[in-house]
Image (tube, rainbow, N blue to C red):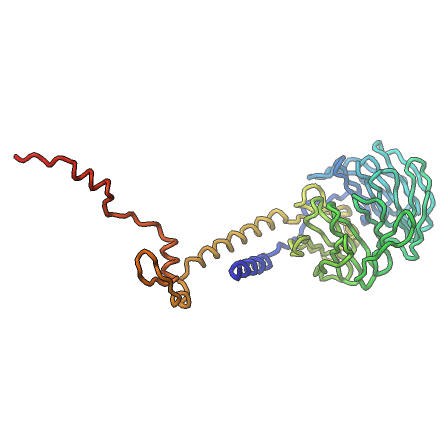
Length: 401
């Protein structure tokens, strides 16, 4: 048991020691906007991606490398501040500083949804795809009936709403992050706070729920990102983001990895189960507004504040996840080899002093010798068997000349 524990300990130490990659140049720049990009959303179902900018336009791209530009959507008369595809990718919600909510269909025809009195910050489609939730600086969450275009419920949160999330297997509850330290969970039947995730000490800017419905990740102005257990509401770990404000968080589609983006342009990729840092992205001076994982988890898409860049648009960055997985497996193999070598080391003197009596030879053999005899190949006996003796006796003698 002691040997097993030491092996596990050495493995964990080895994994910690794995060097993380740091990237300073993106794979691709989608330089199609004329101003900073504040919002990005992706649809795995239709393989589409949308970006929204302060230039008041929405750009549509194919959602896999090389992320080709497809078309531009116009309709808002103020900067685009929120975007979200529904589960099928056939509807896209857009929000703006013009306080308008718009829904675009698969042919990019648009409908207007009026009701907010402040900037739209976030969206969420429920899994039935009948309802859309929007969060605003006007401190309200509006639930819209998509078929009629009418609001049927409003939640007064008392604070600006920054991010919304919902469990994929339980549409009764809405997770809300706003201009306060706690994350509230509203029961949509009673419009009451059912429980809270408490631990942050400042505004929570972004939340996301893993596709396996086990974890919630949050990013805050308190210089931290945290992973929570959905079932218990308890904090599992605090991630060492090393930045002033965490402005965006996201889980990969397989729920195994998470990303945290900060206002200083830094972005980190984490292994969810262990909390280990996989890789780092450094883009000094370029604040991060929103991040999403494409299908290929070896890249991540970032909406940046670029502060005067001539190449406004989304950035595609490497995550190095596949190489990280290989490095971890290599470390495991090294540990396994090291453990096998340990078994061949000289046996401690303490074992040599322990003796057992052999029933067959009536001699004293040390426990260490017994172990060696047990592990050594069984020697071939050279003495003859009774059958061999009989054969020799019956064999005719050679003829004498």
